[in-house]
Length: 259
Image (tube, rainbow, N blue to C red):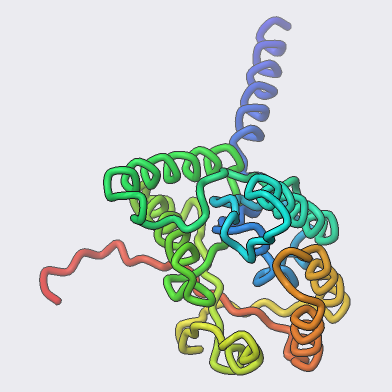
């Protein structure tokens, strides 16, 4: 009897241990600014039905469309609330704001830039471990619109995956735009593009999912005018392909001895 009890106890312990180490159905989206999720929003709405989706936002957005009538601190808080509004519509988890200064470059001096870079990588690494996602989404090296912060967050996230040998543990997918996508958004000067041959993942979404995603644009009163929101919605609805493209980071473990 004691032996049977011991076996049962061991099996329960083993099951509990394994269960605690199984990756939950989480998706982590690593972004530079509040509102960056608008680029991914139809796919986020689609996957919110089956996954818990976590937004990790690196900067405070203080330089995005500054409003003269309010202080910088008020704008930062307003932008946080705008993102919370979007997350509620999309059915996402409460967004995590890391609070680094918008405009993440070397303008404050190289030593300070290195210090902030190190700290940001530590924060992102910590969140990846904590959330334990099924996969990670971020911008590609093209940076979406080419914004330096978009390129930065892509670079930081990729570096973390490479340095920890996490490409298989946490598959990384970069959002990518085609020339057709860039043409669709010519009203903002277009987008940086990736050749379709390198976009190895295509995600279809329904019109209902797109409609819900488009509602989030109304959250961002500080960032977009009514005309800009209207133009954006019109362009999206006119495009009936309802597909977003991504490129998975795929690495070869075979080491060559020549180029």
